[in-house]
Length: 250
Image (cartoon, rainbow, N blue to C red; front, side, top):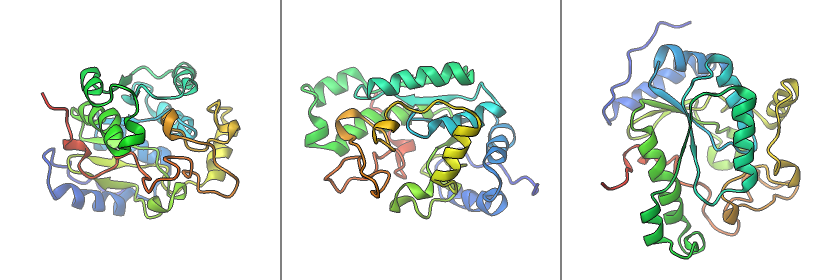
């Protein structure tokens, strides 16, 4: 393994971008489990969290992480608008994988009452809805950490085609160990380890978010075509470069 690089500066700044480039050059081609082991035990011990939606493909990354450390902090954003099947699947995977530190976080009730009293913000201003329900809670949850692990893959959407394994947002290093994996590799891993599937996958949902903004996908469509269908919106915002500094107002 290459010589260890200096630890990233905890403060926001351009140094994180350079750090991400160096990490990619050194270890971006490692197998996913080795990237996870390196991140959890050497690069960011005690200072990295895994963010999971417990969605269609989440079992793969969670299983790999659990094989390294079942006590890895796992942040789950419960927006209050998720499918019941997602909450059930979360509980199933926690039990199956023996995860011991799953942290469910969500939007501030008072903020949501003020901004979305009728539960219709998703149709009026979906970006604002995602910001309140996802981005702000995640920013708060990630504040104790220097890095976070995501389950994104390049094949999922054209906007992710150039996704690096290591990248930087405003305050954190982001790690996507499965960036190079394809749908076939994910399916094979799920079969090999007999991992349960999200109940909605069999109903045509290859990408699963909040219930009001997720629809089934037809054969041949982009895997994320059912997310915010009919809108130009393609991402919820948690992967914007400023997520780490988008904290709730005191």
